[in-house]
Image (cartoon, rainbow, N blue to C red; front, side, top):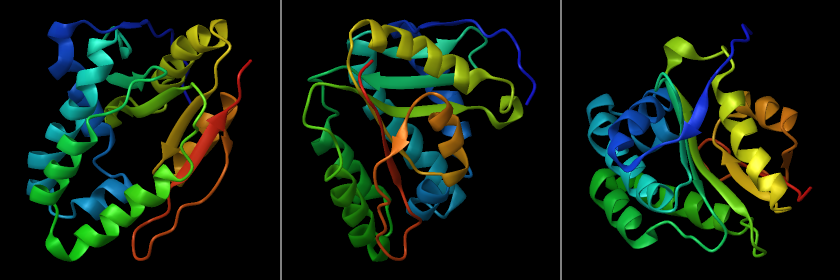
Length: 196
């Protein structure tokens, strides 16, 4: 990995598209998301809408982050803030092929079983444009958010949809707490970083 100095900051309300873009690009080869949307046209149509739905509360609460060059972004939800699950569910119902929908909702339900009940920060999405992966952008985004989370002495939680990303999260103190397997979907790895 080539380490670079990466500037990270909280994204502004006018930068939604600039944060959504690298997240969409970063998930283009993600095993679970591409199981959800195997057709490239369907992925490019539906996934940006899904990211925007997740982004709305992150931007509203000042917990959307970006690198200065807009090649990576992260969407965190602070304690007590939930995604708009009704809108997200309706979007999934419209966008996902009917023969996959039962599996998709099975994955969503199983993941929910591991979501902490105590106050915590939730990393809903983090993504790096593939042209810029391996340059420290994801690590910089994590470090930036975790500094604040540690100052609040709160845990952090995420669900890795790609086994290849688990070591990155482990380097930042997250631990795999389960493996969610809903056949035939790829596995998901809920991960918790205890309060510090």
